[in-house]
Image 1 (cartoon, helix red, strand yellow):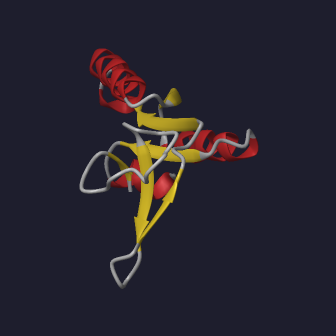
Image 2: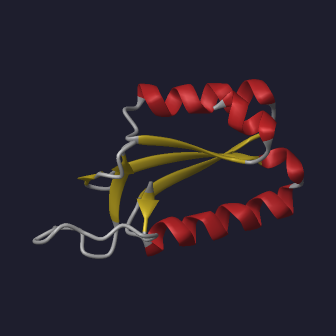
Length: 107
């Protein structure tokens, strides 16, 4: 889980407004710093203007949380998977899917 939600930063946290946490089965929160680099694979097949608007909106949202995100537009299912793999090869901290079932499955 990354963002604001119900998580509270640890005391003396270096990340007072943006933080990561994972809730375990017993409800315990484990904190870690937010990812430094993010690759967001966006389904670009939904129409070029609409995809570009979504890319701009996602860039704004990531920036509001202090995240350095590279948002890439994919035109096909094969390209979705290739772009996700490229993010992994480039040591991206987090690869995110933005789209429907096909995009999520491809990532």
